[in-house]
Length: 153
Length: 66
Image 1 (cartoon, each protein chain N blue to C red):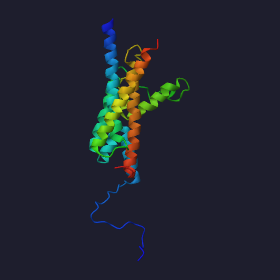
Image 2 (cartoon, each protein chain N blue to C red):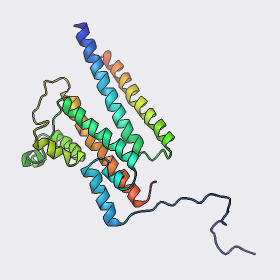
Image 3 (cartoon, helix red, strand yellow):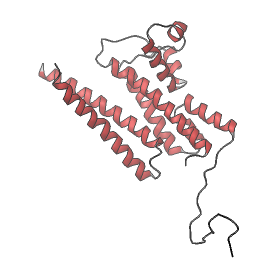
Image 4 (spheres, rainbow over the protein chains, first blue to last red):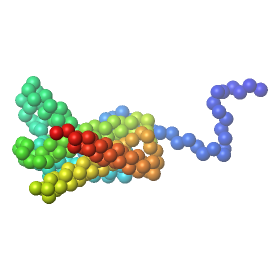
């Protein structure tokens, strides 16, 4: 007798294959925004607490080290720095640093990383620690999106 | 003078190591190439080694450029 379906027969000895569940669209938006605003929070909201601690701890440590090394935080408030055509590289750095989330404008408003201490030996290191912390958080946002869509465990 | 230079070199190496450790931790946490915790740890160690190794090779090459 010919099988009526292309699906393989169920074998009771085989363990059930875990299916990845996606969350609703509004929740996907919320977790991605949370992942951007507070590094690690997106994974925390999806129940990945271990990864949330690792990611948040690493990114915030990079921010603290960057500021301790006298890195510069670019201002997201200055329209000239945002929209002007001169000094394109600083806009790229600002875009990278904006990945840190809500902490970036808060630290800048509190006066951290305002001055250009380019004579300090660690100025470049500090600035790029801050930029890479933001860029890593953009990658984390993609990971959160993949988990929320059910593409990844 | 020599002590100053050694101190600076040590500081540069420590900063590079801290950067490699923190970056590879995040990359290991979000990679698609590992499923289990053990695989993620191995991926993180490999990435850390690659960061430090490539940094040392490049700095060794730069040593000969005046």
